[in-house]
Image (cartoon, rainbow, N blue to C red; front, top):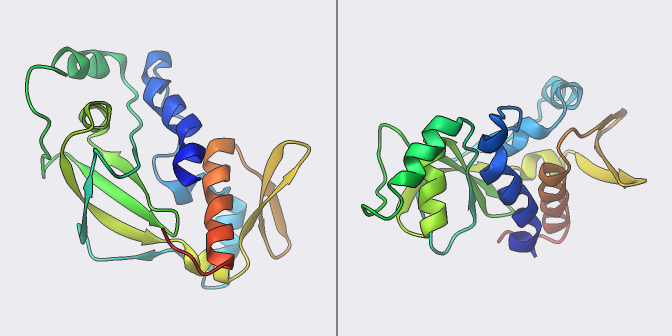
Length: 181
């Protein structure tokens, strides 16, 4: 279910470079509207980070999204797509892996990361980001007339990015049933 839900975001993210776009959040938790983030921080609610590079993702098996944004860099990366094997570059690549939905987001090395995803090859260390403290404190996503709203206590703010909202909503459902993929 999560893999199907991430496909629209993955398509939008992978094609964002064609519009020279930079407006998509590269961190899932950064898609939460700022007033809601501030309210949660005021109440001591934040995501929980695991050890840096504490787990390894396989780009052939795990669900990972990248957000390339510069047309010239993406063109160069695509020119080399079949010439060499994709390899993790410690100086370049950074990935966050969000629980409970089990989706990775490249947050650095976006263009070459996109190539690794497209080729379905390579392994990359990732830092786990646990969203369950947000859900446990009452954060959620509500849909009204096709619009996603981020909700925390008395803060109800529309989401700018509906594909991110869908993943956050699935995380809430998984948390409610005690599941982590």
